[in-house]
Image 1 (cartoon, rainbow, N blue to C red):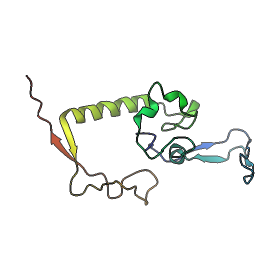
Image 2: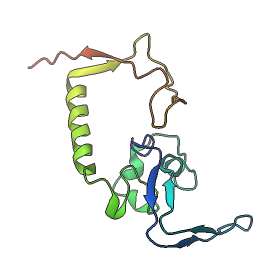
Image 3: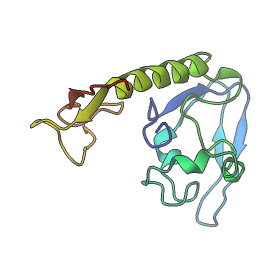
Image 4: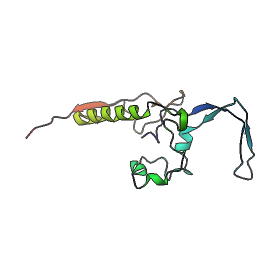
Length: 147
């Protein structure tokens, strides 16, 4: 889920020493990054690149299974950043989201409403991800019968 819909579409970092990004293709040129330059890391683009993920628009949790996660290129999965400046709350945030989702799905079925847009489209008027027109769904209580 966080590969397909990362919490932020770009991350910024400030350069702590001069660095040269070497051109990879002959039609490209080297890029010089100077001390104190700010760069943007395009998380959304990295997560959706077919160079990094086969069939990138497909939601496929098996990409991250124990047997498959070794095939993920380093630094191509960045929902909370990586390295010394990654989000210190990422583990807690993931656990909290999983518990919340579990509790909701244990007791409710999520159902579309007349306002639900299928398929969901991204809003183009914001900087972070949100659904065009908002997220609309209903809850149908699940009646658990004890035997």
